[in-house]
Length: 249
Length: 329
Ligand SMILES: [Zn+2]
Ligand SMILES: [Zn+2]
Image (cartoon, rainbow over all chains, first blue to last red; front, top):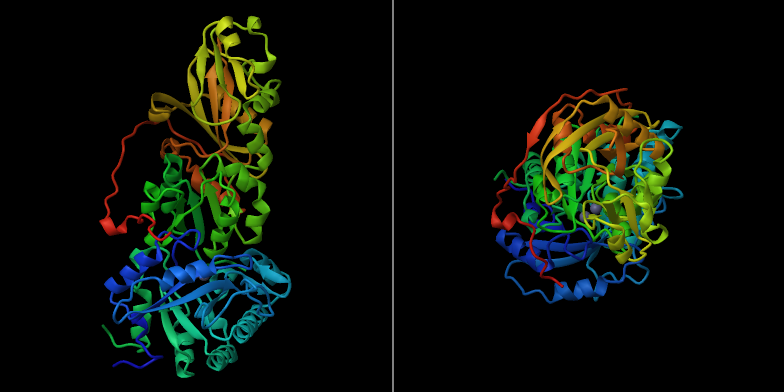
């Protein structure tokens, strides 16, 4: 039995694939495209990392636009940026165009903890938690910043949601239902998709089910930076079939 | 609050023997998740880790190297980075704070230690009153008539045996000119040793493991043995104290005419022959990781006398699993 989530079985999507436009990645958009075709994906989103100073986005978009068309394979674009602070500000260039003529989505990433005064490293966050900030406070700040980022971005995608938690000594089980409802509500209102991420193995089944139940579109994500891993799922497919998001295969 | 997630460790220079030695050692720890980086897509050490953990980095001398590595460490949530590349080390050590700010600890000696070790003239001056050190002067500032020949001539900076040669007489030395970046050093007649040395956060030497190089091929030790010799160990301890070592360095010693070990140079990084030291009982990469994580180290770690011969090894892959040639731009 397959429960329809979004428009496509999430295992036929890989909406987080990096290319040589990301500094440390090793495969070109063309190689990723071929890998997506060979693994039988129906949809791939090519994504590279930006920060406020990034200037190459038009070149990246032009390269993806020039890729050959492949029947039955949708090619989308995105840029991945971290949430900078508790206000949900994102590390994107000021002149970034989202939508027609620009990138299709901004991937909202929890690379650092969005502190009130800017990004906190996991170590800094642990220090704050050792001197007064409770786990619930930290989750409130993170969830609120994520909700605000979705509001700012419009059409976004939550990249590896909650991948930060293990690094700050927390687990998704510490999230309360209100946290999940706030994320789900903001995602639905803003048209944000949420990825289930193979590389960081998150978010877990409880979060995924809550989001699916609220009607949030879920997509698969390998967070690949090498074409040999594009569209290859093991954790995600186990999690997806265990939560009956897709049929057992 | 404890951190139950595995420690993510990035090793750069994955194509070199030192990078591979560090990767191999840390791979044995079940609390570590390894990432490997190199500027060369055929660097063999990349293929010792899973595909998602292989990263390409800019050349250590390129302008963007540090920016890109800091960004990589942030995105990949790297807890500790080991650089096994000479040219990367001082640049990363100079920007240790930027790595700290994204939550990454650089497992390397301090910038001050690196600088004195990488400048062989500064090193000789630093050590000359503390332990036996061969007479060392700048080519441009020395009287060729004042030396006993042969002498050693070598670059002031740089690692390995590149540019090192013997000069037989004063006329030949004079003919070399007066380059300020070239050193003249008294030639010591005795046996040469490499001492892998690890000092804890207080500078206390936890282990000093002398190795003899029984055979060297293109600068790489292909046969060697650990040597229990209190005098060699003690000399390395004094070198470590003189340069303010915290972490791992490789101290090169050679016996002088009187048989005393004297200082040749210090390579402030993991040597390619590290597997012998690990096999002899001192797992320096693992201890250096504990040091970087702020964990206490044992006061001393003993080693056994052990010999090694080395050979090249093959890593077999499906052709599609080799990191592909960039065709995009
Ligand atoms: Zn990513
Ligand atoms: Zn990311």
